[in-house]
Length: 82
Image 1 (tube, helix red, strand yellow):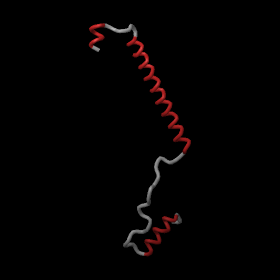
Image 2 (cartoon, rainbow, N blue to C red):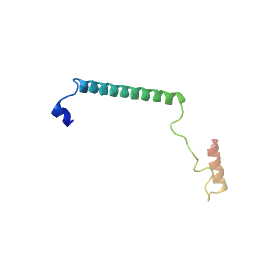
Image 3 (tube, rainbow, N blue to C red):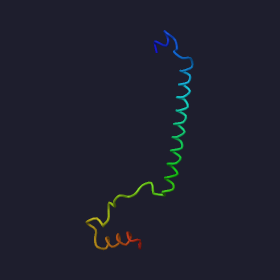
């Protein structure tokens, strides 16, 4: 950089050429990113999977300390008949 200021440019317009090339490459990469985001969202919609899944149930049976009648009521509600 110091040599450029002291001696001057080696070739006229070379910096401008590189500046234009870097700008256009940046625009191109940004466009690829936008298209990638668009395709990714379409892919997620096509799969139609839920956003989350339940890994495990925390309470599968009635907790200790309930009477037989209370357990039966809980089991009925869990089965969907209550």
